Image (cartoon, rainbow, N blue to C red; front, side, top):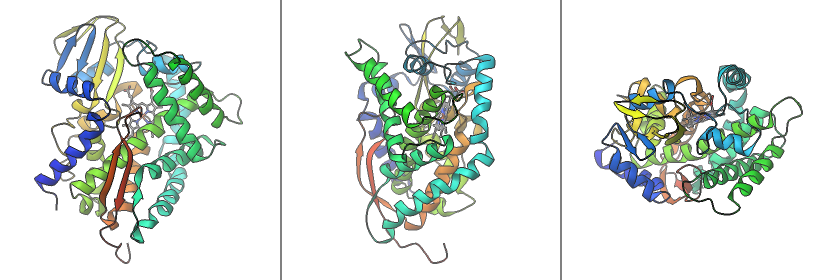
Length: 373
Ligand code: HEM
């Protein structure tokens, strides 16, 4: 049964993915988070949910500015990859990915990730430990491979997507760039594009690479963190319950906020919660705080309203088109793990990844799956 001390233990462990990888940034965000919107020079930190939503839906944003997700996409490749687009071009690129990520697309993809789960979690039944990070990596790589009908192996796609994202983040950290970071990022992206190369010459390599980066890095961060929450906070009974699991999925995605910060740049003057925003200001939109991940623990019986939990997937015309896929995958991961009631036996933070997450997270079953499950 979930207890207050279990929830505290789960939160303590999960915080390590932030404090061990970006301690200074985490401390800065913690210090400023009592203010809905805080200005530090030319940087506006947005913590409050309404202000975060307004920043994504009402403030004109410079989608291709350096230091933003769209800017990184544009610098690494030829552009035209959703994050950096607007208007008609953006709408038609969204339509191009909508089919693969809609309900029918998911039914096509589901057997791919379920096969990975069945095979890679089977050792739990024999009393062995399983590291959930490589499981998530293969699951994400296999899904992207099937989604894009790509030639590379799941492992190589996942590895290349992780390298491309980590290189892009290093290249865009504030302060002077270290020599070679831009080139390393471009090389990593070119390698990923080659692994995903399409038989259809008109399909944009930049869009395909960006989809792989967006899908793999969030999935590899999210799934092991969510499993660790279930293990530490004793949420496996809820995960085993078909009626509660969908709500648990939403809550775990809310408290893990796998993509915790959205870096954007204002394209025109505006106002957020009384704080003036000037064209050119850098906006750091803190998804983790907007979704109240730092204060409200996951509660499948009394989940946060969808308007709040959905914020971890952004808002407005650029809101994540992969949200349905992410929810379906976490639902299946929890359903597959729950019968074993696993506990975490070892966890190591990934200090170099693009997103806060585990480098390895080994779990062991505490019971054999019951007959008939
Ligand atoms: C837990 C998993 C995921 C999280 C937390 C997440 C989060 C986000 C966020 C916060 C954004 C920015 C939204 C905005 O600017 O308003 C985004 C955009 C995007 N995501 Fe996800 N995402 C996840 C999984 C995925 C998956 C699995 C895919 C693809 C298969 C995907 C594809 C994309 C794409 C293409 C965009 C750009 C959309 C646009 O600019 O129009 N994401 N995601």
